[in-house]
Image (cartoon, rainbow, N blue to C red; front, side, top):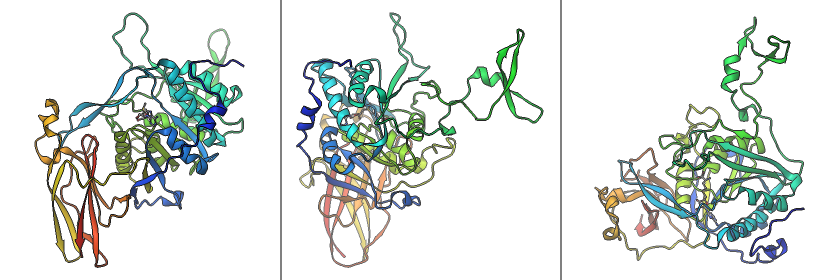
Length: 475
Ligand SMILES: C[S@@+](CC[C@H](N)C(=O)[O-])C[C@H]1O[C@@H](n2cnc3c(N)ncnc32)[C@H](O)[C@@H]1O
Protein backbone atom coordinates (compact mmCIF):
# COMPACT_ATOMS: atom_id res chain seq x y z
CA UNK A 1 0.00 0.00 0.00
CA UNK A 2 1.19 3.49 -0.81
CA UNK A 3 1.81 5.70 2.21
CA UNK A 4 2.31 9.41 2.29
CA UNK A 5 5.30 10.59 4.29
CA UNK A 6 5.81 14.04 5.74
CA UNK A 7 7.86 15.67 8.46
CA UNK A 8 6.32 15.17 11.86
CA UNK A 9 3.94 12.41 10.80
CA UNK A 10 2.89 10.33 13.78
CA UNK A 11 1.73 6.73 13.76
CA UNK A 12 -1.90 6.05 14.61
CA UNK A 13 -0.86 4.46 17.93
CA UNK A 14 1.15 7.55 18.87
CA UNK A 15 -1.82 9.76 18.15
CA UNK A 16 -4.09 7.58 20.26
CA UNK A 17 -1.60 7.67 23.13
CA UNK A 18 -1.76 11.44 23.21
CA UNK A 19 -5.43 11.33 24.03
CA UNK A 20 -5.43 12.04 27.70
CA UNK A 21 -6.23 15.73 27.59
CA UNK A 22 -9.93 15.33 28.03
CA UNK A 23 -11.22 18.81 28.53
CA UNK A 24 -14.28 19.47 30.66
CA UNK A 25 -17.17 21.22 28.95
CA UNK A 26 -19.25 23.97 30.39
CA UNK A 27 -22.80 24.52 29.28
CA UNK A 28 -22.83 28.15 28.27
CA UNK A 29 -26.29 28.61 26.81
CA UNK A 30 -29.57 26.81 26.75
CA UNK A 31 -32.11 27.30 23.99
CA UNK A 32 -35.23 25.49 24.97
CA UNK A 33 -37.53 26.18 22.06
CA UNK A 34 -41.10 25.09 21.69
CA UNK A 35 -40.80 23.18 18.46
CA UNK A 36 -43.74 21.13 17.35
CA UNK A 37 -41.27 18.61 16.00
CA UNK A 38 -39.65 17.70 19.30
CA UNK A 39 -40.61 14.05 18.90
CA UNK A 40 -37.47 13.39 16.93
CA UNK A 41 -35.23 14.39 19.73
CA UNK A 42 -36.92 13.33 22.91
CA UNK A 43 -34.28 13.18 25.60
CA UNK A 44 -31.80 14.67 23.17
CA UNK A 45 -30.58 18.21 22.68
CA UNK A 46 -28.52 19.24 19.69
CA UNK A 47 -25.06 20.53 20.53
CA UNK A 48 -23.12 23.53 19.41
CA UNK A 49 -19.65 23.60 20.93
CA UNK A 50 -17.21 26.47 20.98
CA UNK A 51 -13.59 25.31 21.04
CA UNK A 52 -10.73 23.55 19.34
CA UNK A 53 -12.08 20.42 17.70
CA UNK A 54 -9.34 17.98 18.71
CA UNK A 55 -9.97 18.68 22.38
CA UNK A 56 -13.72 18.60 21.78
CA UNK A 57 -13.56 15.28 19.94
CA UNK A 58 -11.44 13.75 22.69
CA UNK A 59 -14.06 14.79 25.20
CA UNK A 60 -17.01 13.58 23.15
CA UNK A 61 -15.51 10.26 22.17
CA UNK A 62 -16.52 8.26 25.21
CA UNK A 63 -20.18 9.09 24.72
CA UNK A 64 -20.42 9.13 20.93
CA UNK A 65 -18.02 6.43 19.77
CA UNK A 66 -19.65 4.54 16.85
CA UNK A 67 -22.78 6.71 17.20
CA UNK A 68 -22.49 9.22 14.37
CA UNK A 69 -24.02 8.37 11.00
CA UNK A 70 -22.50 11.17 8.98
CA UNK A 71 -19.57 13.52 9.35
CA UNK A 72 -19.21 16.37 6.89
CA UNK A 73 -16.22 18.67 7.30
CA UNK A 74 -15.08 21.68 5.39
CA UNK A 75 -11.74 22.39 7.06
CA UNK A 76 -9.35 25.21 6.21
CA UNK A 77 -7.75 24.52 2.81
CA UNK A 78 -4.28 25.84 3.51
CA UNK A 79 -4.94 28.73 1.23
CA UNK A 80 -2.44 30.88 3.12
CA UNK A 81 -4.88 33.73 3.42
CA UNK A 82 -7.10 35.33 5.98
CA UNK A 83 -10.80 34.73 5.70
CA UNK A 84 -12.95 37.72 5.94
CA UNK A 85 -16.01 37.82 7.98
CA UNK A 86 -18.32 40.65 7.21
CA UNK A 87 -19.82 42.45 10.14
CA UNK A 88 -23.01 44.42 9.86
CA UNK A 89 -23.78 47.51 11.85
CA UNK A 90 -27.20 48.74 12.93
CA UNK A 91 -30.26 48.74 10.76
CA UNK A 92 -28.61 49.79 7.53
CA UNK A 93 -27.04 46.34 7.29
CA UNK A 94 -24.15 47.24 4.95
CA UNK A 95 -21.26 44.84 5.42
CA UNK A 96 -17.85 45.88 6.75
CA UNK A 97 -14.99 43.34 6.51
CA UNK A 98 -13.41 41.78 9.59
CA UNK A 99 -11.01 38.86 9.79
CA UNK A 100 -12.71 35.64 10.88
CA UNK A 101 -9.87 33.16 10.85
CA UNK A 102 -6.44 32.70 9.45
CA UNK A 103 -5.74 29.85 7.11
CA UNK A 104 -1.97 30.10 7.33
CA UNK A 105 0.29 27.22 8.14
CA UNK A 106 3.66 28.55 9.26
CA UNK A 107 5.32 25.17 9.09
CA UNK A 108 4.02 24.49 5.60
CA UNK A 109 2.05 21.58 4.27
CA UNK A 110 3.59 19.11 6.76
CA UNK A 111 1.92 20.75 9.72
CA UNK A 112 -1.38 20.90 7.84
CA UNK A 113 -1.20 17.19 7.11
CA UNK A 114 -0.49 16.35 10.75
CA UNK A 115 -3.41 18.56 11.76
CA UNK A 116 -5.87 16.88 9.42
CA UNK A 117 -4.58 13.33 9.94
CA UNK A 118 -4.95 13.51 13.68
CA UNK A 119 -8.53 14.75 13.38
CA UNK A 120 -9.54 12.23 10.70
CA UNK A 121 -8.31 9.36 12.90
CA UNK A 122 -10.53 10.65 15.68
CA UNK A 123 -13.48 11.12 13.34
CA UNK A 124 -13.37 7.54 12.17
CA UNK A 125 -13.97 6.42 15.73
CA UNK A 126 -17.19 8.39 15.92
CA UNK A 127 -18.66 6.82 12.81
CA UNK A 128 -21.21 4.07 13.20
CA UNK A 129 -20.60 0.91 11.19
CA UNK A 130 -22.98 2.13 8.50
CA UNK A 131 -21.59 5.69 8.67
CA UNK A 132 -20.04 7.97 6.06
CA UNK A 133 -17.62 10.86 6.01
CA UNK A 134 -17.42 13.65 3.43
CA UNK A 135 -14.33 15.87 3.46
CA UNK A 136 -14.65 19.08 1.48
CA UNK A 137 -11.34 20.38 0.05
CA UNK A 138 -9.89 21.93 -3.07
CA UNK A 139 -6.76 21.65 -5.23
CA UNK A 140 -4.50 22.85 -2.39
CA UNK A 141 -4.62 19.61 -0.41
CA UNK A 142 -7.23 17.18 -1.72
CA UNK A 143 -4.56 14.99 -3.36
CA UNK A 144 -2.65 14.60 -0.09
CA UNK A 145 -5.75 14.11 2.02
CA UNK A 146 -7.06 11.38 -0.28
CA UNK A 147 -3.95 9.30 0.44
CA UNK A 148 -4.31 9.94 4.15
CA UNK A 149 -7.95 8.86 4.01
CA UNK A 150 -6.99 5.69 2.13
CA UNK A 151 -4.68 4.93 5.04
CA UNK A 152 -7.23 5.71 7.75
CA UNK A 153 -10.48 4.46 6.22
CA UNK A 154 -9.09 1.86 3.83
CA UNK A 155 -8.89 2.16 0.09
CA UNK A 156 -11.87 -0.21 -0.23
CA UNK A 157 -14.03 2.23 1.65
CA UNK A 158 -13.43 5.01 -0.83
CA UNK A 159 -16.75 5.81 -2.55
CA UNK A 160 -16.39 9.01 -4.54
CA UNK A 161 -14.27 11.97 -5.29
CA UNK A 162 -17.09 14.42 -5.88
CA UNK A 163 -16.39 17.43 -8.02
CA UNK A 164 -18.52 20.37 -7.03
CA UNK A 165 -18.16 22.66 -10.01
CA UNK A 166 -19.34 26.24 -9.88
CA UNK A 167 -19.49 27.49 -13.43
CA UNK A 168 -19.74 31.16 -12.46
CA UNK A 169 -16.23 31.12 -10.95
CA UNK A 170 -14.13 34.00 -12.16
CA UNK A 171 -10.52 35.04 -11.72
CA UNK A 172 -8.09 37.50 -13.26
CA UNK A 173 -5.57 34.88 -14.32
CA UNK A 174 -4.56 34.54 -17.96
CA UNK A 175 -1.60 32.30 -17.08
CA UNK A 176 -3.54 29.14 -16.34
CA UNK A 177 -7.14 27.93 -16.48
CA UNK A 178 -9.62 29.32 -14.01
CA UNK A 179 -10.05 27.00 -11.04
CA UNK A 180 -13.72 26.35 -10.75
CA UNK A 181 -14.36 23.32 -8.57
CA UNK A 182 -13.96 21.91 -5.07
CA UNK A 183 -13.38 18.26 -4.25
CA UNK A 184 -15.43 16.33 -1.72
CA UNK A 185 -13.91 13.02 -0.65
CA UNK A 186 -16.55 10.50 0.32
CA UNK A 187 -15.54 7.44 2.37
CA UNK A 188 -17.54 5.03 4.48
CA UNK A 189 -16.54 3.13 7.57
CA UNK A 190 -17.41 -0.29 6.12
CA UNK A 191 -18.92 -1.60 2.92
CA UNK A 192 -22.33 -1.95 4.56
CA UNK A 193 -23.32 1.69 4.62
CA UNK A 194 -26.44 3.83 4.28
CA UNK A 195 -26.99 5.19 0.81
CA UNK A 196 -30.48 6.26 -0.18
CA UNK A 197 -31.66 6.33 -3.77
CA UNK A 198 -33.94 9.25 -2.95
CA UNK A 199 -35.37 11.28 -5.89
CA UNK A 200 -34.74 14.40 -3.80
CA UNK A 201 -31.01 14.03 -4.37
CA UNK A 202 -31.37 13.74 -8.15
CA UNK A 203 -29.81 16.16 -10.57
CA UNK A 204 -31.94 18.04 -13.05
CA UNK A 205 -31.79 16.84 -16.62
CA UNK A 206 -29.30 18.64 -18.75
CA UNK A 207 -30.66 21.34 -21.08
CA UNK A 208 -29.92 19.04 -24.01
CA UNK A 209 -32.21 16.38 -22.53
CA UNK A 210 -34.86 18.90 -21.48
CA UNK A 211 -34.99 20.33 -25.00
CA UNK A 212 -35.25 16.88 -26.48
CA UNK A 213 -38.20 15.80 -24.31
CA UNK A 214 -41.47 15.04 -26.10
CA UNK A 215 -44.87 13.87 -24.92
CA UNK A 216 -46.44 10.64 -26.17
CA UNK A 217 -50.18 10.15 -26.86
CA UNK A 218 -50.79 9.69 -23.07
CA UNK A 219 -48.96 12.88 -22.17
CA UNK A 220 -45.94 11.04 -20.71
CA UNK A 221 -42.51 12.53 -21.40
CA UNK A 222 -39.94 10.63 -23.37
CA UNK A 223 -36.85 11.30 -25.40
CA UNK A 224 -35.32 9.52 -28.30
CA UNK A 225 -32.45 7.32 -27.25
CA UNK A 226 -31.10 3.86 -27.76
CA UNK A 227 -29.41 2.80 -30.91
CA UNK A 228 -29.11 4.58 -34.21
CA UNK A 229 -30.84 2.93 -37.15
CA UNK A 230 -28.71 4.89 -39.54
CA UNK A 231 -30.99 7.91 -39.68
CA UNK A 232 -32.35 8.64 -36.24
CA UNK A 233 -32.38 7.40 -32.65
CA UNK A 234 -35.01 4.71 -32.69
CA UNK A 235 -36.12 4.00 -29.12
CA UNK A 236 -38.48 6.06 -26.94
CA UNK A 237 -36.90 6.42 -23.49
CA UNK A 238 -39.58 7.31 -20.96
CA UNK A 239 -38.81 9.77 -18.22
CA UNK A 240 -39.99 8.51 -14.84
CA UNK A 241 -38.19 10.84 -12.47
CA UNK A 242 -37.74 14.56 -12.41
CA UNK A 243 -34.02 14.19 -12.86
CA UNK A 244 -31.19 11.71 -13.03
CA UNK A 245 -29.37 9.80 -10.34
CA UNK A 246 -26.36 11.99 -9.52
CA UNK A 247 -22.99 11.52 -11.17
CA UNK A 248 -19.91 12.50 -9.20
CA UNK A 249 -19.70 15.85 -10.96
CA UNK A 250 -22.14 18.25 -9.36
CA UNK A 251 -22.60 21.30 -11.49
CA UNK A 252 -26.19 22.02 -10.56
CA UNK A 253 -25.52 23.80 -7.25
CA UNK A 254 -24.45 27.43 -7.52
CA UNK A 255 -22.17 29.22 -5.08
CA UNK A 256 -24.03 31.44 -2.61
CA UNK A 257 -24.48 35.05 -3.54
CA UNK A 258 -24.75 37.87 -1.05
CA UNK A 259 -28.39 38.44 -1.93
CA UNK A 260 -29.39 34.84 -1.19
CA UNK A 261 -31.66 34.29 1.76
CA UNK A 262 -29.25 31.75 3.25
CA UNK A 263 -26.22 34.09 3.07
CA UNK A 264 -24.69 34.66 6.53
CA UNK A 265 -21.82 36.98 5.58
CA UNK A 266 -19.33 34.11 6.05
CA UNK A 267 -16.87 33.99 3.17
CA UNK A 268 -16.41 30.21 3.05
CA UNK A 269 -20.07 29.42 3.56
CA UNK A 270 -21.33 26.43 1.54
CA UNK A 271 -24.76 26.14 -0.08
CA UNK A 272 -27.53 24.37 1.79
CA UNK A 273 -28.41 22.41 -1.36
CA UNK A 274 -24.98 20.77 -1.31
CA UNK A 275 -25.58 19.50 2.20
CA UNK A 276 -29.11 18.46 1.31
CA UNK A 277 -27.82 15.97 -1.26
CA UNK A 278 -25.18 14.59 1.11
CA UNK A 279 -27.48 14.30 4.12
CA UNK A 280 -30.39 12.74 2.25
CA UNK A 281 -28.09 10.24 0.55
CA UNK A 282 -26.15 9.17 3.62
CA UNK A 283 -28.55 9.38 6.58
CA UNK A 284 -32.09 8.63 7.66
CA UNK A 285 -34.38 10.68 9.88
CA UNK A 286 -33.22 11.09 13.50
CA UNK A 287 -29.67 10.01 12.63
CA UNK A 288 -26.83 11.92 14.23
CA UNK A 289 -24.70 14.19 12.05
CA UNK A 290 -21.53 16.05 13.04
CA UNK A 291 -19.62 18.93 11.54
CA UNK A 292 -16.44 19.63 13.50
CA UNK A 293 -15.59 22.74 11.43
CA UNK A 294 -19.10 24.11 11.31
CA UNK A 295 -18.41 27.73 10.30
CA UNK A 296 -21.71 29.48 9.72
CA UNK A 297 -23.66 26.30 10.52
CA UNK A 298 -24.74 25.14 7.05
CA UNK A 299 -24.62 21.44 7.96
CA UNK A 300 -26.47 22.06 11.21
CA UNK A 301 -29.19 24.09 9.56
CA UNK A 302 -29.84 21.46 6.86
CA UNK A 303 -29.68 18.62 9.41
CA UNK A 304 -32.22 20.47 11.55
CA UNK A 305 -34.58 21.01 8.62
CA UNK A 306 -34.32 17.39 7.54
CA UNK A 307 -35.16 16.05 11.01
CA UNK A 308 -31.68 14.80 11.83
CA UNK A 309 -29.86 15.32 15.15
CA UNK A 310 -26.68 17.35 15.02
CA UNK A 311 -23.42 18.28 16.73
CA UNK A 312 -21.40 21.24 15.48
CA UNK A 313 -18.24 22.88 16.71
CA UNK A 314 -15.88 25.69 15.79
CA UNK A 315 -12.95 27.48 17.45
CA UNK A 316 -14.16 30.82 16.35
CA UNK A 317 -16.70 32.43 18.64
CA UNK A 318 -18.22 34.43 15.81
CA UNK A 319 -18.86 31.24 13.84
CA UNK A 320 -20.70 29.83 16.86
CA UNK A 321 -22.65 33.05 17.22
CA UNK A 322 -23.67 33.04 13.54
CA UNK A 323 -24.62 29.34 13.67
CA UNK A 324 -26.72 29.93 16.76
CA UNK A 325 -28.61 32.84 15.20
CA UNK A 326 -29.06 30.84 12.01
CA UNK A 327 -30.70 27.98 13.92
CA UNK A 328 -32.80 30.34 16.04
CA UNK A 329 -34.17 32.08 12.96
CA UNK A 330 -34.53 28.88 10.93
CA UNK A 331 -38.28 29.34 10.49
CA UNK A 332 -37.51 32.20 8.09
CA UNK A 333 -35.10 30.19 5.97
CA UNK A 334 -35.93 28.30 2.79
CA UNK A 335 -37.67 24.99 3.19
CA UNK A 336 -35.04 22.53 2.07
CA UNK A 337 -37.53 20.25 0.25
CA UNK A 338 -39.67 23.03 -1.23
CA UNK A 339 -37.10 25.75 -1.73
CA UNK A 340 -39.57 28.49 -2.68
CA UNK A 341 -41.43 28.15 0.62
CA UNK A 342 -40.27 29.12 4.11
CA UNK A 343 -39.37 26.37 6.55
CA UNK A 344 -41.76 27.93 9.05
CA UNK A 345 -40.96 25.72 12.06
CA UNK A 346 -39.08 26.42 15.26
CA UNK A 347 -35.85 24.52 15.83
CA UNK A 348 -35.51 21.72 18.32
CA UNK A 349 -33.89 22.75 21.56
CA UNK A 350 -30.12 22.94 21.67
CA UNK A 351 -27.29 23.67 24.05
CA UNK A 352 -24.13 25.63 23.57
CA UNK A 353 -21.07 24.22 25.27
CA UNK A 354 -17.67 25.79 25.63
CA UNK A 355 -14.28 24.48 26.56
CA UNK A 356 -13.63 27.72 28.36
CA UNK A 357 -15.66 28.90 31.24
CA UNK A 358 -17.69 31.94 30.44
CA UNK A 359 -16.47 34.95 32.34
CA UNK A 360 -19.14 36.68 34.28
CA UNK A 361 -17.99 40.08 33.27
CA UNK A 362 -19.17 42.21 36.08
CA UNK A 363 -15.96 44.15 35.98
CA UNK A 364 -16.57 44.70 32.36
CA UNK A 365 -15.24 47.38 30.25
CA UNK A 366 -18.29 48.19 28.16
CA UNK A 367 -21.12 49.78 30.08
CA UNK A 368 -24.76 48.93 29.80
CA UNK A 369 -27.56 51.10 31.13
CA UNK A 370 -31.03 49.73 31.39
CA UNK A 371 -34.40 50.26 33.04
CA UNK A 372 -35.86 47.36 34.94
CA UNK A 373 -39.57 48.08 34.84
CA UNK A 374 -41.35 46.17 37.59
CA UNK A 375 -45.01 45.97 38.40
CA UNK A 376 -45.30 43.49 41.31
CA UNK A 377 -44.20 40.21 39.77
CA UNK A 378 -44.19 41.39 36.15
CA UNK A 379 -40.87 42.62 34.84
CA UNK A 380 -39.64 44.01 31.56
CA UNK A 381 -36.29 45.42 30.57
CA UNK A 382 -35.49 48.38 28.40
CA UNK A 383 -31.97 49.05 27.16
CA UNK A 384 -31.15 52.74 27.43
CA UNK A 385 -27.43 52.97 26.67
CA UNK A 386 -24.37 50.92 25.81
CA UNK A 387 -20.96 52.51 25.73
CA UNK A 388 -18.41 50.45 23.92
CA UNK A 389 -15.12 50.23 25.83
CA UNK A 390 -12.78 50.36 22.85
CA UNK A 391 -14.67 53.09 21.10
CA UNK A 392 -11.63 55.26 20.52
CA UNK A 393 -9.65 52.42 18.90
CA UNK A 394 -12.30 51.68 16.33
CA UNK A 395 -11.36 51.93 12.66
CA UNK A 396 -12.84 55.02 11.02
CA UNK A 397 -14.94 52.95 8.57
CA UNK A 398 -16.76 51.38 11.52
CA UNK A 399 -16.98 54.50 13.66
CA UNK A 400 -18.61 56.38 10.84
CA UNK A 401 -21.46 53.91 10.75
CA UNK A 402 -22.32 54.02 14.43
CA UNK A 403 -25.21 56.42 14.88
CA UNK A 404 -26.94 55.22 18.06
CA UNK A 405 -25.79 53.09 21.02
CA UNK A 406 -27.80 50.09 19.81
CA UNK A 407 -25.74 49.96 16.61
CA UNK A 408 -23.05 48.22 18.71
CA UNK A 409 -25.45 45.49 19.74
CA UNK A 410 -26.03 42.40 17.60
CA UNK A 411 -27.86 40.24 20.10
CA UNK A 412 -29.27 40.49 23.58
CA UNK A 413 -31.01 38.05 25.82
CA UNK A 414 -32.42 37.81 29.32
CA UNK A 415 -32.14 35.05 31.89
CA UNK A 416 -34.61 35.98 34.63
CA UNK A 417 -33.09 33.51 37.05
CA UNK A 418 -29.42 33.13 36.17
CA UNK A 419 -27.58 30.41 38.04
CA UNK A 420 -24.09 29.03 37.71
CA UNK A 421 -22.57 29.25 34.25
CA UNK A 422 -25.53 28.30 32.13
CA UNK A 423 -27.37 31.18 30.57
CA UNK A 424 -30.96 30.28 29.88
CA UNK A 425 -31.98 32.46 26.94
CA UNK A 426 -35.55 33.10 28.07
CA UNK A 427 -36.13 36.19 25.95
CA UNK A 428 -34.02 37.15 22.93
CA UNK A 429 -33.74 39.81 20.30
CA UNK A 430 -31.06 39.71 17.62
CA UNK A 431 -30.21 40.88 14.15
CA UNK A 432 -29.67 38.57 11.19
CA UNK A 433 -28.16 39.48 7.80
CA UNK A 434 -31.64 40.16 6.44
CA UNK A 435 -33.55 41.23 9.55
CA UNK A 436 -31.75 44.21 11.03
CA UNK A 437 -34.23 45.57 13.56
CA UNK A 438 -33.44 45.00 17.23
CA UNK A 439 -36.07 45.31 19.95
CA UNK A 440 -34.81 47.48 22.78
CA UNK A 441 -37.60 46.61 25.18
CA UNK A 442 -38.37 43.05 26.22
CA UNK A 443 -41.81 41.51 26.51
CA UNK A 444 -43.17 41.46 30.09
CA UNK A 445 -42.14 38.43 32.11
CA UNK A 446 -44.19 37.02 34.97
CA UNK A 447 -42.36 35.60 37.99
CA UNK A 448 -44.54 32.91 39.50
CA UNK A 449 -42.91 32.83 42.93
CA UNK A 450 -41.78 35.66 45.14
CA UNK A 451 -38.16 35.77 46.24
CA UNK A 452 -34.79 37.17 45.20
CA UNK A 453 -33.53 36.46 41.72
CA UNK A 454 -30.39 37.02 39.74
CA UNK A 455 -31.70 38.72 36.62
CA UNK A 456 -29.03 38.72 33.90
CA UNK A 457 -28.74 40.38 30.56
CA UNK A 458 -26.38 39.07 27.93
CA UNK A 459 -25.12 41.40 25.23
CA UNK A 460 -23.19 40.24 22.19
CA UNK A 461 -21.70 43.20 20.40
CA UNK A 462 -21.07 43.46 16.65
CA UNK A 463 -17.50 42.16 17.11
CA UNK A 464 -18.75 39.01 18.79
CA UNK A 465 -17.78 39.96 22.34
CA UNK A 466 -20.13 38.51 24.87
CA UNK A 467 -20.93 40.35 28.10
CA UNK A 468 -23.21 39.33 30.92
CA UNK A 469 -24.63 41.89 33.34
CA UNK A 470 -26.34 40.63 36.50
CA UNK A 471 -28.76 42.40 38.83
CA UNK A 472 -30.44 41.26 42.04
CA UNK A 473 -34.17 41.64 41.88
CA UNK A 474 -36.75 41.13 44.63
CA UNK A 475 -40.23 39.93 43.69
C1 LIG B 1 -14.20 26.62 5.68
S1 LIG B 1 -14.90 27.11 7.18
C2 LIG B 1 -16.39 26.15 7.29
C3 LIG B 1 -17.53 26.78 6.55
C4 LIG B 1 -18.83 26.02 6.69
N1 LIG B 1 -18.83 24.80 5.94
C5 LIG B 1 -20.01 26.90 6.27
O1 LIG B 1 -20.79 26.47 5.38
O2 LIG B 1 -20.17 27.98 6.81
C6 LIG B 1 -13.83 26.34 8.33
C7 LIG B 1 -14.15 26.62 9.79
O3 LIG B 1 -13.30 25.81 10.57
C8 LIG B 1 -13.00 26.49 11.77
N2 LIG B 1 -11.79 25.86 12.34
C9 LIG B 1 -10.52 25.91 11.86
N3 LIG B 1 -9.71 25.17 12.64
C10 LIG B 1 -10.48 24.63 13.62
C11 LIG B 1 -10.25 23.77 14.72
N4 LIG B 1 -9.02 23.29 14.96
N5 LIG B 1 -11.28 23.44 15.53
C12 LIG B 1 -12.53 23.89 15.29
N6 LIG B 1 -12.82 24.72 14.25
C13 LIG B 1 -11.82 25.07 13.42
C14 LIG B 1 -12.83 27.93 11.33
O4 LIG B 1 -13.01 28.80 12.44
C15 LIG B 1 -13.91 28.05 10.26
O5 LIG B 1 -15.09 28.58 10.82
